[in-house]
Image (spheres, rainbow, N blue to C red):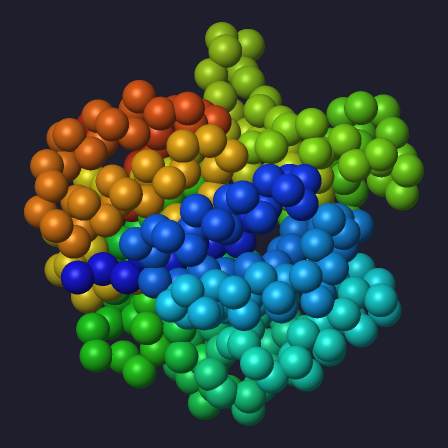
Length: 298
């Protein structure tokens, strides 16, 4: 059996859209939900207490709740906000920055997020004594590399990014604001106009990258539906599904049907390809020596 985990919403959605989304998540087969603003400190549709209220509601609905920390800290205010999250004590945190790692050390348990670069078994071993009980590998690691870094039987559980636009990089510069010829501090929160980010295409029309404020994502939608056996062989039993603005409930349902109830892989992939996803499917990073944006059909 695979535990399905809903990753944090990476985009700026209106509060009403967020609440409707998490109402659906509460009734979904996912066992874990990661909440919080992890991309841009200027986004305040949800205040910390709002996130905590939502976390309590989801816990009441039977979900394990994790709070994700901001992935790029730029100011003292960002650091104060991080300290408040560390001090809240009610919910497990996911560290996405070295400052979060420093503050969480000794506060077991916590999750090592994919924005903290861990590319070797030696590096991961150093985190376990600090209280890490779960690791989300960087998206560009192949499944065989993940297994080598964190083999079966390790005290640290692996949660693989299995669906969604892949978070690739962060910058102090807001690319969405620059696209609209605006200053970062007076951006007008234009990223709300693009609920799945702003797609960049090559001259021949291929989805290449996605602008999401200060974050750069893949243009394609990563999907590991065709890799159930490889996941099992690697001892991986937790899958992270990153939210999209449309048809996400059906995405979660198809992952649950395939991974946990013996549904047909071909049918599940076929269903996903009919949904209103923000880009084409890809699974290139799952195997070594393949382009990340490639898609190998099952």
